[in-house]
Amino acid sequence: MAERRFPMSGEVDLAVVQALQDELLVLVNTTNDDLVLDCTNLDFIDSAGIGVFIFTQRLLEVRGRRLRVVNMSDRCRRPFEILGLTDLLELPAPEPA
Image (tube, rainbow, N blue to C red; front, side, top):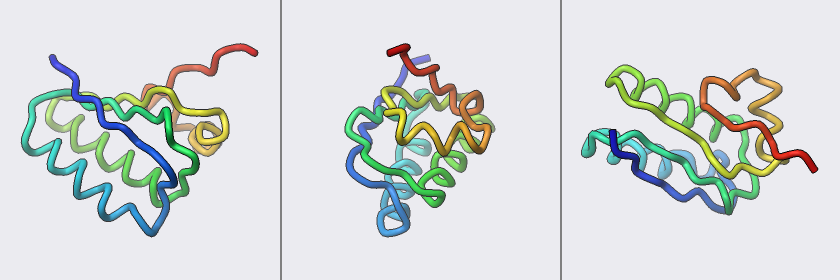
């Protein structure tokens, strides 16, 4: 299956999650692609942002598609580790220093 890359940048918090969720819903509903969230330029994510990632993953899963999260900094990755979500979102292990 093809993949659609979606760039994440800046801060994903309560102030922007509705707009982000709306954008991701359009991709989920208008394509048949798996979705890759590229977090190269993501500086911060809070619990509301994590909720959008999980919601999107669940929607795709029901449709037989996948969500992957790539290029996430250690700082942004930490909340996902604490919540035990790294496997669910297919977050790759951090590179050794």
